[in-house]
Length: 453
Image 1 (cartoon, rainbow, N blue to C red):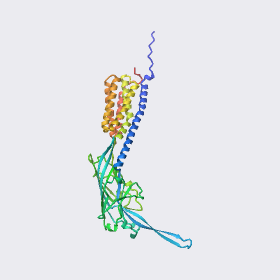
Image 2: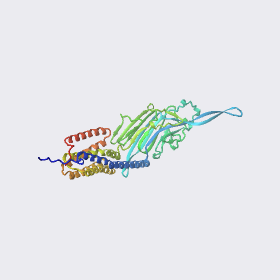
Image 3: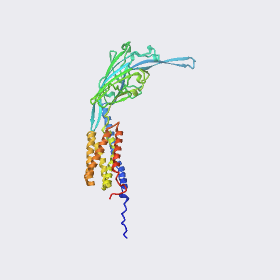
Image 4: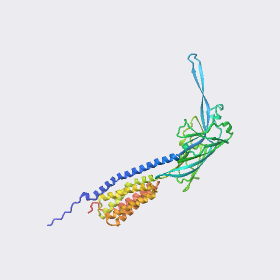
């Protein structure tokens, strides 16, 4: 009687389970060089910020201003009572000191024409602008009745007009104001009472008795800045109307108030925006005493920045690195399981390193070109490399062509996600669901209990 021949026992290390574990561990190991790539992107991005700061500091920083503000001094008397210990008599002393009242315009209109351009230094660029602003409006006669200040205590002949602003060093022309048909020149002054980071421009003394009329007293002035990144203003008029136009096609409206949607226009050649803000829209009155409050929280304006710079796009691309490596290894593992072709763990490692090289190629080429061109060049280079390598290890053309098509689809899908903002999560979720469905379909006939022979 013949004894049936025993089948050789299958080694665990030759099973699909062991190969899946090794491929999974390799995928996790490749996160180390991928993290180095992310650090490289962060380092280059930080260097860009340093260069942009240096460029902006030389050209002109962000612009923030509000004014004009009528500053009127007044005399306040304070009485102190003391007792002479020797004579026991009561002694009264009257001390006078000067305080200030600040009055905002009844009407304030401003027209701003902003011309932007991009300055380049080495591989980095920054958006800067030149802004010409024209202001006009009027004042009503200052009212001190709320503080019960007598008219004889008001120093009408020592009033001044101030403008609170930043970026004084980048004002390009002399700033003069026509107030009540008289011209006054602004000079920079140190304001020790300022509660914010602004600086001040102030006129010489104005005799309001000669300037103010019974009704409204008009004013107008112009100011020209070189600046960068942002323009913000505070609506200090009882009625404030701002008109701004620029050649910048990607404005980001910021601050406490947005422009009127009905008149706002944004096109490839620039934008036009209008604001109309009433005093009831913000929580401060038309006059204040003693000190000016910090009004920065009520500011509004426009950001002139590149919406998504090259390093932000590279950073977003690198975040999908683990997904690209995992899906690529999954494709090779399914081909190996279906075709019974042996793929060594070293060959998986070479494929993984080629996928990592995509990101180093992407960031290095992006610094000398656009992100789209860099993505196409890096993608074609890596897909071609992995496809040619697949021809050698898979010994046919059918599977390498499938791999090339799969990688092309994957990189195209990721590029679409990177460009999207509002719909990135939705499109990504739908895409990953479709990939999962495809993997489940192609792996349905695999015998996971067998080993490759």
